Length: 484
Image (cartoon, rainbow, N blue to C red; front, top):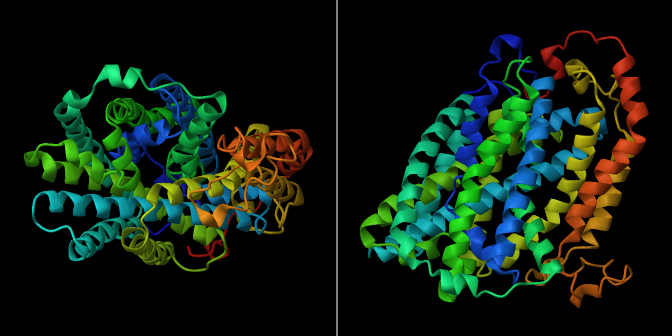
């Protein structure tokens, strides 16, 4: 079991090369869910080529942001939500830490619920039962895998992700070969094109569904790399490892969804299980394995990072207890999704866009702050409210809150009734209101990212220079680190 929590990783324990980042990022994103994103993208009313362009740009750009944030890990040796204390202050950083925790807990819950529903669907097709009892057993097994991985920590996760990468990679190729005859290019190419607003909406959805869902955890694994590791290597291997599988899966998912209206509709209700309907019976068990392992790979990284975010938010317990607490919440949320709700896609999109706005604002602040720095972080002062990074920094907090308020005013989601209050700026800004052509473009995510980045870049330079001008602080006492 990993003993580290928020504490800094010592030089003696730092190992590997940037190339080793390929395994956790590929393993976390080689999920069969990537195929379903083809259906999600076409759901915005755009053509195959528009969806492909939106997917490529959205996936690569958003994971490139993860690569840049990952550089902070090797420069600071601490988790992502500790490193952003340099921008927000030690206690001021609790606000983005809480948002980060909510996002990662939400993602691990969604992935666990999807793995449960996929298992039940496969067993139902095999005639072994797919009712409530089957779902309960599936949820227990999947939940146990995720919780054990999150509690045990870094070393087990790295080994687990290597296995998941190999197994799911091979079985996914087999799946593609088995269902390739269901692709009808004439039908796919006949899907009509959508408007520029619909294209932007799909692009933003891809960003929030992929890289923007990981930026708040991007440095959690690079912090174990030696300090002299190549920054370009960290960016490159993080981006490549995270992007390559989703890009390939998206292309095939677009071809499948565009070839069958029936399949496209079914995916909205059961994104993984619907993909079994075109499989031969003999491959259902291997499909269940690849679906569950791929989703577990992502959920394990989420529960690990959600535990760290919870500690960064101020909870004073050991890391493994924080991960265990998140596991309990994950199971409760999965029960709601699996047994109590029928509209998965509408709630899912609402969840992504709502939390995607403040996370995008935080990402903009974090990236600009990192770009302004010429020296590595003073790791000890990341834990001291009276250190160089301060207690509560007003500027980044005000920027984040303002960017979030503007961002929420520019996004809508009618499928989730609890989000009807959003979109309040679409009318005043002349964008057609909540029923206009810009209503579903989700401009708020892009606006929050840009405002956080440009505002910090323009106004934060003096603060960073003052921080870097001070002498090195005294060594960190482990008692100064909560949960260590």
